[in-house]
Image (cartoon, rainbow, N blue to C red; front, side):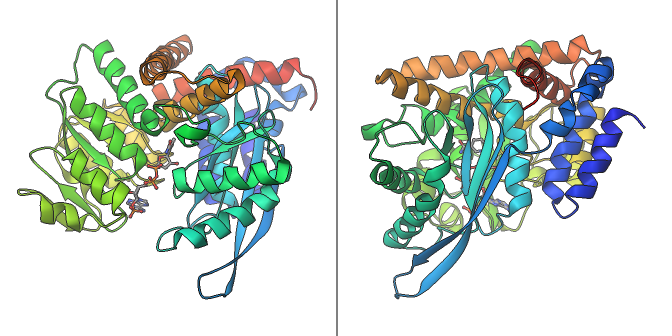
Length: 444
Ligand code: NDP
């Protein structure tokens, strides 16, 4: 049995109940085969892969808090510090009822390679809780966040582990968490990113993941002799990533005709009205039915269906495993040219394979949504300098980072004879830097 297969077998055995984590490890190790085969003796002796798939440490803790009725509630908190070979652990905090160890581990594992791809000195980590901020009052969210940080503060710090937002963790939650950290530590430091602009946040962080997704998509199209002008785009999701992806796509002259949330989706043949969407999702925190009610010509459909719409480019920006094999077939049948992931692992492995085998240019989330964490790292830099850069300064650095990522993953794929396989290219480029750093630092 080859080294990759041996490690995969062991990972499956040890983590049998963690489906998403297994999916992420399989996807990465499968595409790293040529690199690993070329260096097998060294990697095997140093147990490099065994060390890579085992988190440095994981914390799981009780988060008790009191609701508005005076009832004590208990949630579970998680933080997984996966790998700090190239910098302090960095990765978001997901607050969603679906959160469990397997999901946090898959996200933390992916984060190692994504962070490496940014070219910035940040390691991989992830955390969160099964707490659902939806439908909770501000006071309840604050009570949860304060309790969560009362445990987590022991393990994080500006040079140790710097968490950020993710699904369910927006500016409000980061604010409450930062306040509690500051109180417990008596220290003012950039321990979290995604902070408000009045207390150390970076301009353009809110827009960064969506904008970055469009910058890399534009570069991909350009390198294939195409422009964004006039392209029809299908987007899923209606959260932070989706909203700013739609906004930047429209600034580039493309037309985005769909968006979705966890209950239904919108088809708007005239192009999504971003201001209206922002008002519904960011201000009123309401459902998409309100969008269709306010926008003539737009249709609301229950359930899923975004990928049935004819488009040139598809940008899945909602959640993991939301683009399935049947969706991939539909996209190919409709002549879709490119799929770039805004969310983390939104496309299943069989759907990814189908898209690649049928000539669709496919960039996986590790590369295409790295703009968020890259800008978080720029926020860390500004905090260390005790300076704030302008929107244009941050945005232009973000754009350059995304263009560099495209060329790095393209080059890595070509070096191993897999031209056009950007998934393999991203895994290889991300892995090479981390592996070199791990080998240089000895057995640890
Ligand atoms: P948000 O919570 O802001 O938005 C998520 C959106 O996806 C919401 O519209 C939500 O609907 C929808 N959604 C959630 N679950 C489902 C589902 N099962 N089916 C259909 N729609 C669903 O999160 P973000 O926009 O921040 O994150 C989206 C994805 O991008 C995640 O995978 C995240 O990990 C990833 N990501 C985010 C980054 C960031 O900077 N924010 C950085 C890199 C990756 P509803 O409104 O009903 O909840």
